[in-house]
Length: 392
Image (cartoon, rainbow, N blue to C red; front, side, top):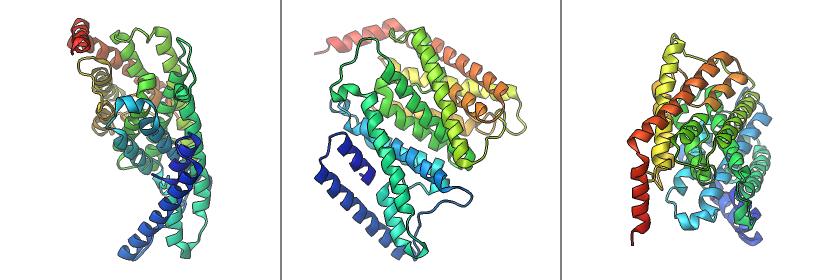
């Protein structure tokens, strides 16, 4: 656990004041001991500092957003009441993936502490070069933790004794906004920061947020996936109106995240569209194939009552991004998501290409739903579900 997370637990009522103090003291002491040990072993110490070419505000925003993500995911996969019944085995995976997503995405600016204990420990062991960044980082990290606790209470009001009216979808739309925001922020940071592991970092962000919010909104975080779920016909509550609202919120969230990333890095994206010498037709074919893969896997592991996975669904979905990213990243950019395509274009240039991408990605969602209907026939699933229900 970390200092910011202990503070979150207090805000959510899980810890009392004394526990928070003890946990924070132990975490900081352990961090300092680890940093001193590393400095002795390596003969040098790591420091907390803003990378050259970036502003302190940019670094603090990186710490804020990814500490928020980390704390928010911890609350949803480890502290939410649903975990008592679900007995999820994926919580550690989801939490660890937050660090991977943030380190590759935002680490290039701030160093990727995302934990006051880490920042304090590194600042103490490198005190000869100056001291103080840890205090500034810590303020933004604790602020991220507080926002995580607040939004946790909003996406899971029933955990706090609030009864919801039938048909209300506010929490679902908020979940989709948050999931897409973290996904597109990570996409944007990896692109602007020139990450060598962009596909893996992006996949980790998607995986973590699916585990955190999948039981609330379905964890679509992609208009193409929402299209696939709607046309699969397996969720009677997912109406055309609801699918449209999901799409609007997803694109709005993606655009917001991309604009914020541009502000943090102080530079814009290159023109959105095919990479290198590849043509638009080639890029669109790649987007069609791998968006189809992503949407089809979602239907299989998260929607089907026959092949649905109770534990590894997030991992299966997330790693479709790894496959598509490495396969098509140098051809189309590997967007695989209209919210990503439109968001990046609106915060830069290449809007016409982004519309073409989005239409093909939505078509891929429709094709995934059509294929799913053939491979996972509804009557077979109904019989399977009935057999499970009637089993002693």
